[in-house]
Amino acid sequence: MPKDRFLLLKPGEARPGRVPLPPSFSVKAMTEDTETRFSLLEVTLAMDIPRHVHHEADECIYVLEGELGIDFDDETHIATKGTFVLLPRGVPHALRRVSEPPRVLQISSPGGWEHYLEDLFEAGPAVFTQGAIDPAKINRIAAPHRITYGSRPPREHG
Image 1: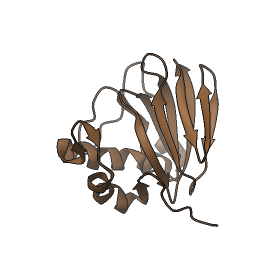
Image 2 (image 1 turned 180 degrees about the vertical axis):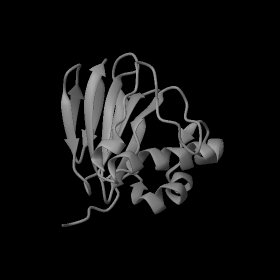
Image 3 (image 1 turned 90 degrees about the vertical axis):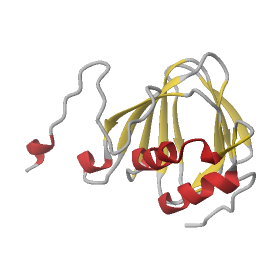
Image 4 (image 1 turned 60 degrees about the vertical axis):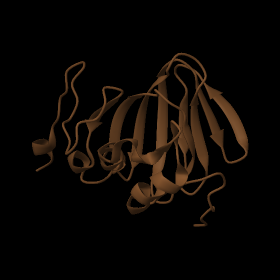
């Protein structure tokens, strides 16, 4: 019954997951809460996210605070407070801090982003080389979630 899935989180509350996430990632709706339709996180972008492709999920971002740099395919954009961005699956993109760490709502559809983050944080520093995300190392964790990191990931058609 749909009303059995009702969820109300008070300010500062987050959904607990398999692995505790850092405070900069607050899961509001898990994939299981939405019958796999989407996941919703409140994220403070503490570090830049290198170019990558989501092969299955569309990513939506709504900027709550700060300025977010978005490299989408071969274009560069600055998203300020109140800006909404749809990053369709299959197109390379990167996210970076332009101002103080921007705070955003991040929706992944279908869901699953929070489970990728759990796997990523469970791996810990093993995905870094000299303090930066290493595509060769992170791709082992990202692959089961249909995400590819790299300088120019292949575009998928369809």
